[in-house]
Image 1 (cartoon, rainbow, N blue to C red):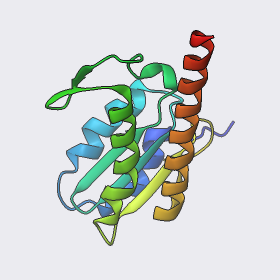
Image 2: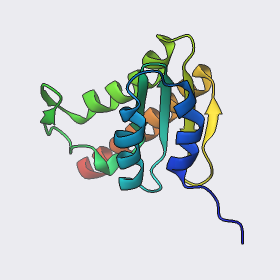
Image 3: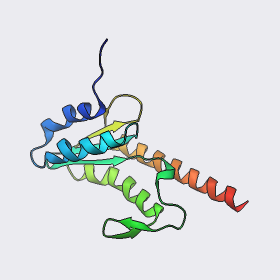
Length: 142
């Protein structure tokens, strides 16, 4: 029986050779995040200065309608958090010419994608989340 590599090992093998500084991002933080969120899709960016991962959680993991939660240096609602995650997917890798972008769809293996593909995935994700939120709001109002 052939054992497939874990999602984290796949990310590590594709990313570690590119990192010159802040390898702890990948070796400690990303490892913990990926292992604590099995099956959650994500976009992972690697530059020579470390990594960044954006988890593409489902709509119910965000704060409720009108709810403000502690976020970074203040408070934010679900729209702010969603927009920031989606914006970061395309902003961060665009700042580094030699960045590598990986995508995990929650089911299969990790694959390399382009910045344009990351943008399409981010927009589709955002629209899917917004559709769910709007449909819930419309059902509750009816």
